[in-house]
Image (cartoon, rainbow, N blue to C red; front, top):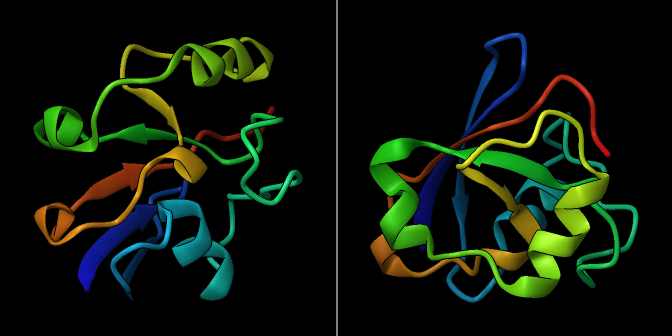
Length: 106
């Protein structure tokens, strides 16, 4: 289990224990964290779970796949550290991960 910190665009923090094997998106949805809509349910078919991975965690969170990169074309305010939270699988190595949500989801 990893403790993930979700930060809303207004600065509100949510620290959630997320079981290994779930996605960062699933952890947010199961705990009703505002700011991650997940319209496609985690199928990498939309951009409504867009997050910014804290710079200190970018390498551990991994690189975007080409499909994820294509979906981010539909997101607002994409940055170098943008990821779809449905594509980040929780592992013990991600204990302490910090993600921020954009003001608007794709």
